[in-house]
Image (cartoon, rainbow, N blue to C red; front, side):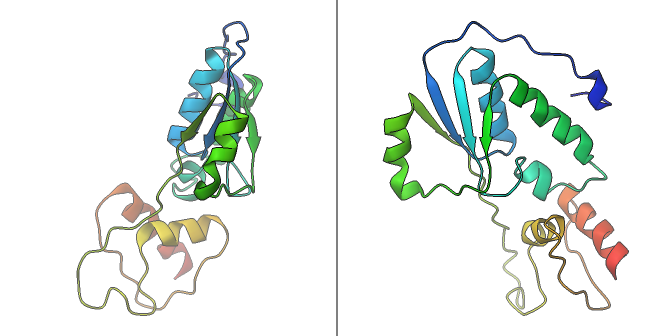
Length: 170
């Protein structure tokens, strides 16, 4: 990565190879796999269900921790390596054989986007949100209404991101 998009050096790729790969998911694992395959000279198409590439990097991590211009510059670098991103294209895993027939290989790197349950009474009540679900909605511009007071339970980066977003909207 780079401190500023203008500082990202170009990446050399190996001579083109005949293999074509499909990558399902454009989060950290998907873009890493796509970049490595492209670096090796393979043609790569990344399929992403969201309207923009980045997965958890875009929809789960706050722009105060990962500025969008940096993420976009990194994705642009990967595009410049020859990787094609097809966004707004969910892949039905029950029909994965169609992708397997069309490509030399398929890499499944779709995120789970599942919050862990705490096993506490009341966590299924209206107004109680899982952290990843809530952050995803916030970064899509679908911020649910807050009630005062709001509480965040947790101590990881996602909890701190959520607390910061909540503080700005309560």
